[in-house]
Length: 152
Image (cartoon, rainbow, N blue to C red; front, side):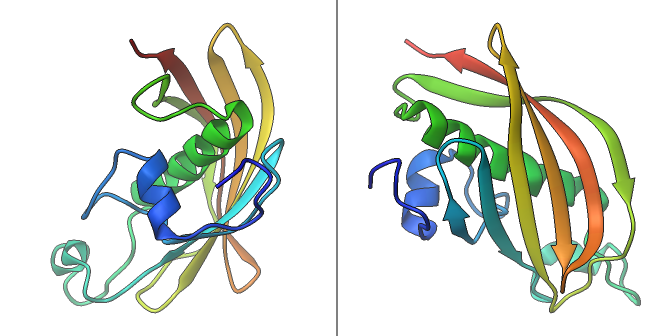
């Protein structure tokens, strides 16, 4: 799949990201311009094991996992921007999060739309702006900071 392809499926996601179940938090990419923005989706299912403890009588998808999903979408965009080969050339590491705000709960059955834009890169540190929405309503926003590390 070339960097100009707009959307891609779970097979391309798994080719690019090292994450696997239960920590792969992106189900598909709706669009990606391979330059500045990506729109990815995480389907939140009541069958996810985390809901047995968060919380048993009132299941809520944890905010920290929303941030991780945004970071994974940012990593996908980074790979598309650089056209690098995962595990061969580059590894994107979650280096920080700034300005995180949570505006609504994410519940089982929700579809989390992850909108990430590339802001800047300096000396291997990449900054992205992320928005997670459910039905067009903001659930979380944050600045995601990733460190791009070349592998040998």
